[in-house]
Image (tube, rainbow, N blue to C red; front, side, top):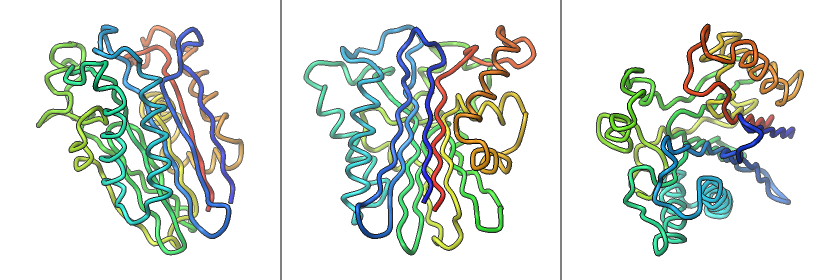
Length: 260
């Protein structure tokens, strides 16, 4: 098994709000992958005394522990329980009803001898590569369906955040786990897993330098850091977003690769 993880802040002067880990048992087959992308509050106000990095670390730790130790639970159940556990850790000190209470996108994968399970919530991406090189992208595209002009308004975006007709993230409501994109694939049909936050998927979705099918091969040959460095080079070449419009000039970027 080969495992590679890399993460880099979009702005070195600000904390990286992404979080990732891979856990494998000391004996036997199987493992879990977790990637989170913390959502930066657009106005700095989220009703929480702790901040987004604290939230992603808490949620990520709970997801890694539960998905690894509780194989009797579905990944959606794991996410719901982890959200509840994280909310309980700060509901006495923070306003969890705030629409921008700390939240994150989620990629979860769990594999064993027979199958690979996956869960994706919001705009991070999971790629499943088959032994013959076919790549399937697991996407939750609800945020992409929101018109770009709507996302320019904080109030309009807030109205669609974790709401019907809008998009969903892991925040303080465990029921959001039922909104995630989930599935199972026979283990024999999966050669590798590649999870990326949207700061890394810019290489495909914003800068169009390659497609989903190119990503696993690039990481396998040159390493996970190479993908992030290519994104950073493209961002630096267009710092004001003139050629490639985007919400942030540079964003936190995480790439996590597991070759089974």
